Amino acid sequence: MQEQELFAKMSHTILKGEIEEAGELARKAVEMKIDPIVAVNNGYTKGLDEVGRLFRTGEYFLPDLVAAGEAMKHALDVFDPFLKSRKTEKKLMGTVVLGTVEGDFHDIGKGIVGSMLVAAGFEVIDLGVNVSAQKFLNAVKELKPDILGMSALLTTTMPNQKKVIELLEEAQERQNVKVMVGGAAVTNKWAMEISADAYGEDAMAAVTVSEQFAATSVKNQANLTPTINRIRM
Ligand code: B1M
Image (cartoon, rainbow, N blue to C red; front, side, top):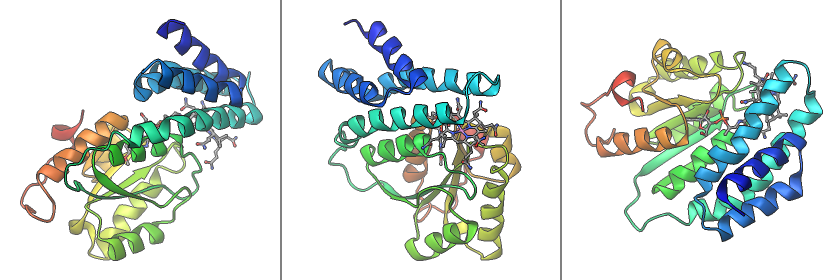
């Protein structure tokens, strides 16, 4: 099977919510030595975008969205060990606390970001989905991460990213951590509006931004605060 054909089939399994088939195609991609990220971007995500479009136009319903999400997660389960096994022997790049904000249960993109950060040498503490502002704050206080990453896929939950930043400020913890925001609903403009330190447009950008933070370590060189525009990929 050619790569393009495989990608089209991957997209199709998501559209149809074919869980087992989505996993089989992921295994096929591994066999063909296709980069998991390329397969996710060119195959499965295309399907998810189409599912999103069909949901918006009223042709698909919630069960279709659920099935698509399940199929995607099944494929990611196959890829995950391969993504993480890229981890190099280099020293720990830093610690990232990651979570999807309160009211939001989307975790596919966050999962990809987390796996790629692990592969890039970061320790990732994933707080999961529907994470309250207080829980993010507690994690910053207790775990003292270099980066706090918040994902939001709904326009209704984006404001919870702002709420976390405000809570960090109130608790005088804001200067101790770099805040990165991302997720389908989020834009660079929004990130600037809420005074986040970075916007990750996709998982690759999230890794690049985190690497830049590591290179200018918050803890070692607190004098450098890149603006979102400068670090946006
Ligand atoms: Co939902 N959903 N969903 N959904 N869902 C969207 C987001 C939506 C755009 C669909 C649509 O209407 N077209 C829409 C949001 C509209 C809006 O607010 N603008 C929507 C809706 C409305 C809903 C419900 C409200 C539906 C309902 O109940 N009536 C409901 C909300 C539930 C809740 O959270 N409270 C809901 C539920 C669900 C499911 C649970 C069924 C399922 C999620 C399953 C799961 O995650 N485990 C689901 C799905 C699958 C989708 C779509 C189809 C796909 C989302 C996805 O995983 N994309 C989505 C439509 C779409 O986006 N095309 C949709 C793939 C993923 C790789 O992309 O998460 O953007 P993404 O991550 C990217 C980047 O954004 C970035 O890197 C990732 C990889 O490149 N990134 C970061 C992500 N997080 C980052 C963090 C960073 C940096 C980068 O730093 C910290």
